[in-house]
Length: 410
Image 1 (cartoon, one colour):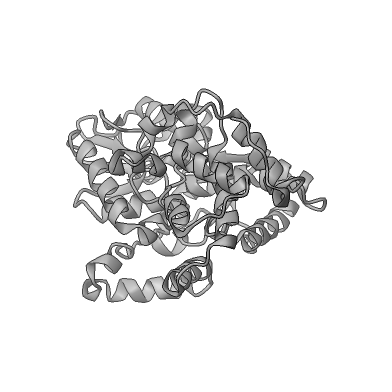
Image 2 (image 1 turned 90 degrees about the vertical axis):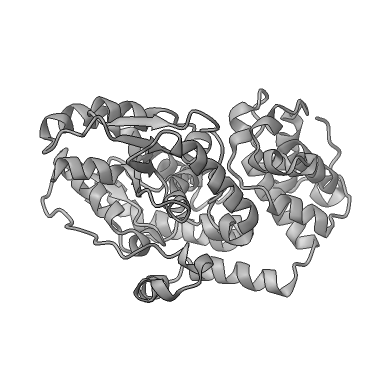
């Protein structure tokens, strides 16, 4: 696709990046078949091809409208379209640039501004943990919409105290320790059983995704730099990887090198951080032979685990099938939905708060397919997906690492 940049974008990093991405697009439309919002709404402008057309117009000098902004807002950034694009269009990067440009030109209503500010500042604030504890204390009294975002209180369990020669860093995350603390401690216990020590740098916080995707890109990149500073001494001391047990954070940290490529002080370090970042599932091939003899309880093969692979895992990181394959090798019976396993569940970071109607339609559609498996438990790999799916079902929804931890430490 040819584009002629408007003078204001010529020679700018955003303009050059957008132009390079737009050139790859052949406008074939394969992406519409895998776009969740196009499947729900049937509107070309609520699919990747239509949104690309809108962004192209803006970069060529057209004045965006409130309608342009809403069509971009309705994108989940699930990146499913990237998995099916024959031309390799970096849609996720393009829509980040497009939203930034459109928001600079189209003022948002005061109410929207306030909600977005509360999300980007509140979710990443030290006050989030105490607020979540308070919400859990009065959870039964909360209205349903708020109750859906407050999981029941969970025991974090024991953090292992053994030291090992092999060490990995783990991002604790901004919301996961408060919402579902057992995910992090289960990760540490499983790695401990494999002879790997998990280290958390206290100064590291949110990966930067929340602010970055809510168009506070300066705030997001500031958090990225702070994390690099917190991790760097541990990298120099020999930490062999940065392990992500929240696949949404994993996508973002793996892209630090791309996002900070023009920062002379951080570009090289960011590239190294991205190189060292591994989703927890990427460790499984080496862990399976170590952990299998250590299982305290053989998994019940009759109990089906319905696995929902998050978009951030299968599309954002392009990691497909690893969790199911390796948990099966450990004796678990793991199945993905027979239909639309590739589609987003509707969580998508802050999306379920900002676009609840679409998010709940996608949630119920996803749960319908998973329930066909008659699972004893539903598993996933991202805190947002787990919380969102749990709000629509009585079937327990857990992180897959918790199931492995249970089998090791019964």
